[in-house]
Image 1: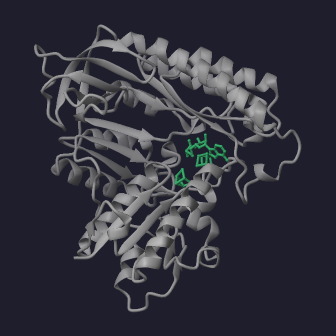
Image 2: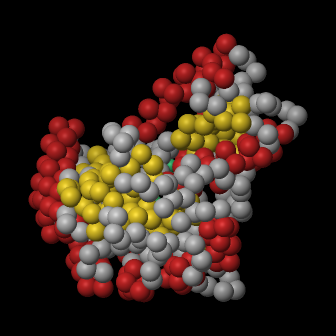
Image 3: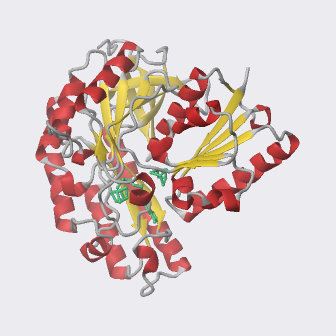
Length: 440
Ligand code: SAH
Ligand code: SF4
Ligand code: F3S
């Protein structure tokens, strides 16, 4: 039996694409191995969002090169956003790579592996939604469902529109059918994936659809108890989607609403097309309809031209909103993006580092404070497995997307009620409430 090894970098899109690569390889009769050295096919699914993502991957590629030197029949494949951003340059820079493909061409892997000529080949077209592919889920009871590919936004710092192409929605019926199939396989929680999920459906012809309609349809799927999605864009966050959180039983009380910066001036330079007022207005609308909703975000520090005053506005928004958690990034110039060409107002490295420290302090303090609202409450938890730090305890996730470590006897895939005893900024701790089982 032939074996494969896949290493994944980057976002949930890539994690899901990797599951599809694995699904395809298994349908060709390959089996997964934990060691690169034992694999006949070594694949990397790459990310290019920040410079650190690139350099981390290149070190991994060096290891695969050594494996191939020992066993020249090994096939090395590089997929994902980094491959797309370099295209055929991949083969000149790294001649030991056999196949390279962009995020829109995952399905070509089968064609390559079953073709006679295993000479270096690259696949970099964008063809809209690439159709249904088999997947091999990492988690039995949780599934990703891709609802669109690409991105039509123009954020000046971002490489994704180049690496994933124009936005194309997946047909409505196809999304619902996949959710039904997943439910039939025991999946209880789905995460709908797109670069800007609230733009979903505008391009569908003849029947346009909205993201809120899609939430309603997925909510109606028997067996799907929880719906999550990532990411919405604040400019397109409309009341119908917020109301879906309030009205639909399976839509979770968590919204990831990327802020990027609290300064309207910087948001404009980033081409985010909303300002601080509009963003805070979205937050207010969410809090009005779903008062307990968890809010998380993405923030970039050190965008060119960011002054201490601009940065202070980001801190102010974090104080005001009180995020349940935030991903914080130092600005990284990416090839081919507008922001990479800016030469004025470059923020010195030590200033970026110092701002990042201050930002993390505010984010963590507020997240810690916000998390205390769960202490003393009984919350519904989807059991995922055993605790990473203490195998005698269980680990799961709340509807608010908090990880919980708890004493109990639930099995993976089960919904249980947990009495929360303690909360840090990151995790909750407690014990299964034996009186009230969540038996939904
Ligand atoms: N489409 C999603 C996610 C995009 S990538 C969205 O718009 O929310 C995830 C995050 O990476 C972004 O939200 C942004 O905060 C960060 N990011 C993107 N490009 C970056 C860059 N050049 N430097 C630093 N962070 C970046
Ligand atoms: Fe990048 Fe902006 Fe699109 Fe997100 S919305 S993927 S940040 S261009
Ligand atoms: Fe995701 Fe990285 Fe591409 S964040 S969209 S894998 S550049």
